Image (tube, rainbow, N blue to C red; front, top):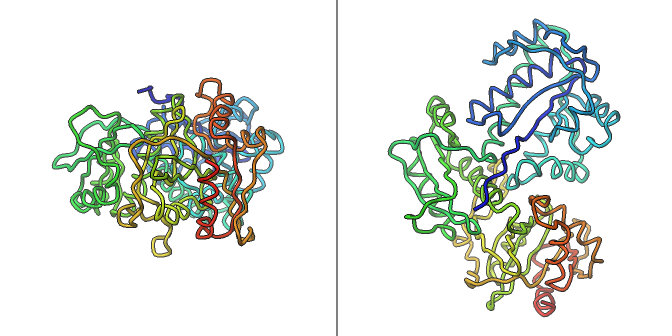
Length: 461
């Protein structure tokens, strides 16, 4: 199994002077990441100022806020924003839309990597799936921002009084905690010690064996739910695993802090734990197959003979809904990641992640067994790739059309995990497309109507 990628995800926080809001955000985000067991070699956080004076000291108010929220203000000096700093960053965060836009004006290539904190929270909470490597998130966020503009209702403007500064400190502290909790599922950390009285099982995610340890006061309930919703991915223990994940559920904040310190995912209730576990399992498997498999953001179903049709689309555009509809009639292969090696497909029948109004901010995990989705054959081979175009104003009756080769490859590349690590990169994608006779675009409005064109798709395959 290939080694996991080692390059850190680099976050650059930018404000005007790098003596107030940016250093507070930087130091508190560093603290939040450390509390969640995420080392700097996995996520690295720095800051800079659009008009900063290099070497300037942090303001007394900013230092007070950092210390008040448990951070360390020692040794900070301001840095001016440079092309080198911008080029090295994977994600840039600004406190206001005006500062975000100024970063993009000065450094146009950063336009799809710079966001306000408010945008980050909104896009993650309402649109973006988490089941993708962290390095892919800026592109996913940028695509969804273009489709779902975020009204900036709460900006982190420069404070002019102690009361405003205190409110800003509370806002930053809450925001960095949410970000660290979200990202904690997406970095592959070594679990330093297995929790006592833990329950375990082993999951297979397209060929990757991942050991799951359930711990905390809620471990029994969590273990039952993991076994239930991941029923189709559970494999016998007894062999070495490729990765280990500990998940702790406990109402006690101290117990959660101790679990995070040893590298566990830790949450107060089972639904939150299952939500983040789904992303953690998927991303660990993607990381370990980087460079070996073509891994597409796609749902997939299979015929009785093992022919697989992959339905490719960005996150949050209806793949899971389509999987529920088609999986009732055809073998459910995956709703999230289609793993391809040559013409062979590796099934990943993970729980389906479903948005519900009663659980705002997280997705419930539904077992494919509880949804009575069909089971595919053991041997699967790729037979067709379909680019999804689902729109509220799309055609009432689904429309199929061939996609020109070069245009299709460009679209496919955006939905491919770890594309730069594939040998021959675009040639590999081109060969994959050629092996199934080209790409097809499916335009539709409602998932239920897609059933009417499945005979045509199977026939074309």
